[in-house]
Each structure stands twice: as C-alpha cells, then as structure tokens.
Image 1: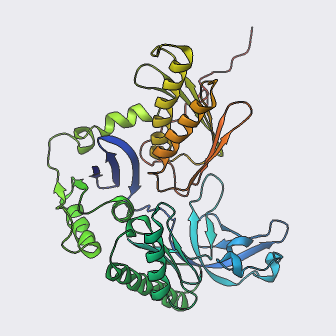
Image 2 (image 1 turned 90 degrees about the vertical axis):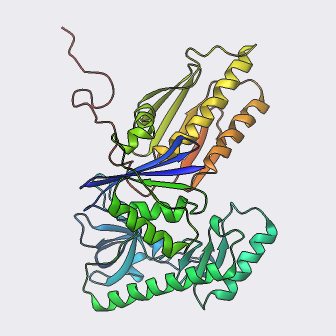
Length: 413
C-alpha cells in the first residue's frame, strides 16, 4: 500500500510518497515558484546557431531557453526527413513560436524547450501532432496492449497522437474517452491563448506538486492521502472528484501535535537517505558521489560478514545494495550517467541476479531509466532521465571551506 504525506506551510508544500512504509519519493515546491517543466510559452526566437543546430528562445525567464533542431522536426520519427535540415531553414530570429518546457533551468543554463507538445492525463498522454498511438511498455499482456491501441486509433483524430499510460490497463473505453476530451479542451485553450498573446507569454502551467503526484502515482481506490492543511484537503478532494468521481478513499486531515513528516517517519528517512555515506542493514555501506552529469556509487561490505563463503557474502551485500540503490536513485531523483561499483563477483549468474534485482526495483520508477550492463572493469552502467530540480527543500548544504570534497586545502610549511 502507498501513502502520500503532504506537509503545507505558508511558503512551501512538501510531498512524500511511502511504499509499505519505505520512503520512495520526496519533493517540495514553493508556492510562488512552481516548476516550469510541462508549461507552455509563446516565445520569440532570439538567436539561431547553425553550428550548434539550435536556437535560443525568449520565454520571459532570466535565461533564454534552448531549442534543439530535433525538437523542431515532426514528433513522429517516420515523418522526419532522412537528411536533417539546418536549423536556419526552420527558424528565423524574431519569429514567434509556441514551446513547451522539457527541462528546468539549471546553473547557468536556461530551460530546454520543445515543439513536441504533450499533455499528460490520468489514463493517457495527448500529443496534438504526433500522428501515432503508443502503449506503455510496462503493460505486458499482448491482448491488453492490442485493445488499448485499438481504442486509441478509434478515438484519435487526424494527426493526433496518444500514449496509453500504465494505469490505463483494464480501464473501460468511457474513462479513456473522457480523459481525451478533457485534454483536447486544454490544448484548444493553449492555442487560443497563443493567438491572443504577444511573446514572451505564459500560456499554460502544469499542475501543482500534489495534483501531479495524485495524477501520476496515486491509486484513488487503494492508496492513502494524508494532508495537514484543511484548504489543501479540500483542493485535493476536488481534484480527485474530477479525476475519479465517487471512486476514491477520503482524504485524511492530519491534526497531530508533531509535524506530519515526523509522525510518519519521513524526516528520519530523509536524513538517513541523503548523505554521502549510507549504511545498509547489516553494516554494508554505500558511498554516493554526484557531479552535474555523472553519479558514482561505491558498494562496500564494511561491517557486514554474513554468508558461509566470500562469494556468498559479496553476493548478499550486492543484492542488498541493489535494492537500496534502486530506491535511492528514485528518491534523490538522480539523473544522467550512473556508475555503480559493486563488489567483485566471480560468477556470472551472481552478476545477473544483482542486475535483475536492480531492474525489479527501478521498474516502479516513473522516470525513464536504462541499465546498460557491466563494463570490462566490473562496473554497472545505467542512465536516468531527469527533468525537474533536485528534491527541493531537502538537500545537503555544500561546505564553504571544502566545497563538498571533505578536504580542506592547506600549504605545507
């Protein structure tokens, strides 16, 4: 069973997702600083750079957004030209264009934007110009995949694209059709605002943090939702009623003396999960080092001595580490290239067991993740897409003296 824990203050809303008591996702959002991902803007092309096959677009933010040529071509790969055209033939400085934010601004970089428009609903993702129907890879039954694809083909209009989400499995056609009608009306509103607005202008914002998690990760009939704000409870119930009329468990209003995050063990798990060195059950440890594009995770037996042989001890440690690493990657929203230095195992079947354990855990992650396999040096490579900021509201403060290295430079006398 999953539990959504929501803590609201005047400035920040914090959301934690527990799966059988274990913290698997955490995020926070300032009330006046909602994330940009998913939002639509009418922007103005400022620079076109043929050498980079990209353009910079003013969307009204501090930094101009970055638009790559692949995000200007047709969203359906089969409809794209065999030879990629120059960005100069597609865009000109001063041109006004509707874009959607794919990645948040980060560091000195502006947001990454696209013209491959998507609108996520409860049961599907609507793409106004993609011209195809897809079904989530997590739906394994071929008969159900064929049913959903047939429903999508029957409901969509010319040029429209639809991706059936995992939660659409076994849902009646009426629910899917209602979702599509709502998303079409949203798109019509966006195009109408684009016609009436002058660039740069915000046309449409994504849902709030609580609404996004309800839409994407919440089963209204099975999961529990606890909120410590009466206003937020009313808003959540109104959203649930729109999404699943009369088919959701009542939202619980928490009124305890201690913080709701402390009451449900979230605070303790956060402190335990965001350090550089993490201790696993039995005494094994993980060392977690992150850069902007690369994360390296080192597994050590440390004080763990279980098993009747060295190979058994190592394999048990790696299996335990794989379970925890899968959870932490999702919780910490780690993105980019991830290298895991498991303890060396002699037998191929043990490496396969570790890979399968990690795959099983990350299959619950909604973010696109790929395990690439083992290198010649015995390292496991994987990648994970990342669109939003780090888990806002709970991130270690970098030491001003050592810059986060744990070492302070000094001249030898």
